[in-house]
Length: 220
Image (spheres, rainbow, N blue to C red):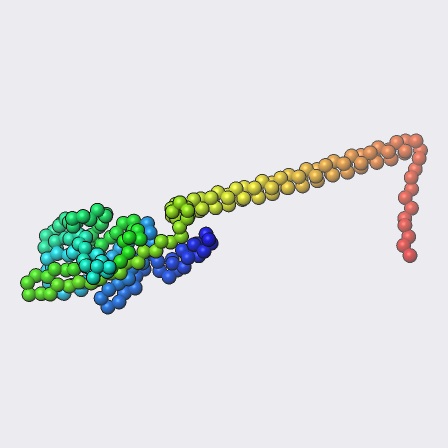
């Protein structure tokens, strides 16, 4: 099951899950994963030379005949205008003044749906609006429901195991080298000892007048 969830997570990232969006004529599809921040661009087309009065973000309730629920509003006719939340909105929201884009921090599955950006125009001009469809993926989820923390733990454990494995390989290599050198030293000492014993034997035999002659071998 974990392998399937991990594969699903990789596929989502491969096909642009996160900040990637698919644009159409008047609306936009934005995909993200639970726990990430979602950036919703205002798709309302502003006309050049028109000073719009304010920007309002709504969430479209598709289950109630596309009823609009006001989220935030900001006046565009004043510099450094504050962002005002509608009554009943408890969720943290951020509105970028330069692009009128809406930021939803730490999104959940309940944040999925359609959002509408509305630019209020002055008299003599038409209001402009555009919609963004936010799709939120649950992603790979474990028993405790903390997928990001779980993956962070897995990464830390994998790094620790890799370091321990490398240390063990290094220790084994060092031990083998030490054993090899020690074995060669013992062989060399034994050989040297035997050579000295043979030399002592020859010297003793020569002192007693015993001469050993090694006959050459003939090969047929």
